[in-house]
Amino acid sequence: MRLQPDEAISLSWNLKVPGQANNRQKSLYFLYNGKGGFEVNIPEAYQTLIERMIEGDRTLFTRADEVESQWEVVTPLLNDWQSSIENNGHFSDIYQYPLKSDGPLLP
Image (cartoon, rainbow, N blue to C red):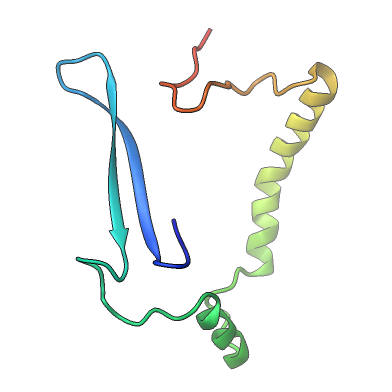
């Protein structure tokens, strides 16, 4: 996702090639003001957010109870990871693998 300049969204997938054992990366790309885009004037970064804040419109902001609920989910994970680092020196339960590889080699 690119915010500025030239706002755009890009999604990439690793897809299995039919009839073959390997994968190939394919992408979708959308440029807001490019060919096939909206071709409209897009506000500068944070312009809409600041305008809504001044107007008292809270619809673009996260409520406090939402943030607290998110932390209730994330905090146990962070605590487990921190404990794992302290005990093992690394994230023992997270499968790590090289960038751009086909993924982790599971035991």
